[in-house]
Image 1 (cartoon, rainbow, N blue to C red):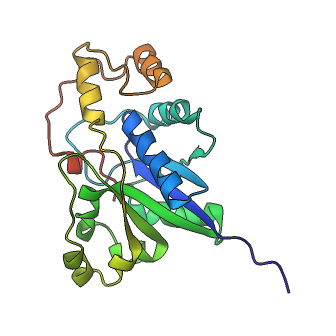
Image 2: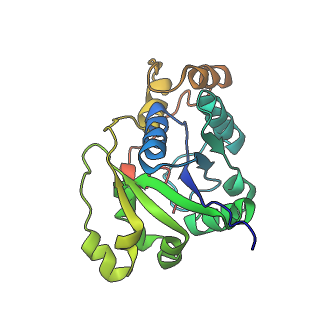
Length: 222
């Protein structure tokens, strides 16, 4: 009888990451520690299916910033599955491609904000997603509750596949960082130093005049 491979618990954190910031890193590490994850994979979206009225930085820049940001943490990784795929980035496709790349001996924990979990009914094939991963809802400032009974009525089984992450509330957003850069304000402490330097050297977000829209749709990746 052959040896049964050990099941690996892998976190997946998707998003636009334009730019990645310290809030992303803190949530990823909290999930890793509290859920016993062996690593967390950052997956930048190629083309978010829910666009937010602004131009998104090139994928190579967003990926470069992620790689710079995760250097200090040996448990963090990146994946370009969404950048390599044409068309909108959907979570069901992300998980399918990661499964293909990492094999069947992996159990995925998909990390996202509680506000995003509340919108899962609008996602592509949500009933398939909950069979492919466990959803991990991270708390965000101003959004601490979710109507799980309502979601269960529409997506039977989701309650058993959902975990709330009791993480510190970090009030940092990529949109605020872009706005501060555009206004010539410092972003020290909001992003890793290497990311701040990259943004400066590449001239990212300079002169941006973006129209603010609700956070729940910014950088959406469903």
